[in-house]
Length: 151
Image 1 (cartoon, rainbow, N blue to C red):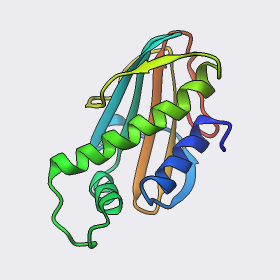
Image 2: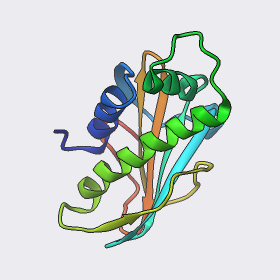
Image 3: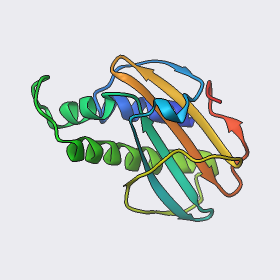
């Protein structure tokens, strides 16, 4: 079990998405993300968890999660649904780490989004063999701080 949000992202990418984590790094520019999905949360605090994916990563994630042959045609909506499932699982595991294990939250339905601008956020990125993942947590009481190797 990971004790930091970047570790959770790495574990979820590997175990749910069958992606191969390589290294952490600074959060990439929003313009380099092909797809961004998010979940809103409320409860002890409120905010949004965003997950960005570099070019081709959502498609590869869908192929891996569905067990399809490598060159299978994957609809854009199917790739988006796979990304939404990943952000949902990441959110459920990251929130207790960011806000404390006793805090209770309600997580909204995953949706397409754009990366946020401004303060009250922490972020990190994970490079996998298949592409780049970027995690951004925006919410009350989230200081602008790095997540273990992030920005």
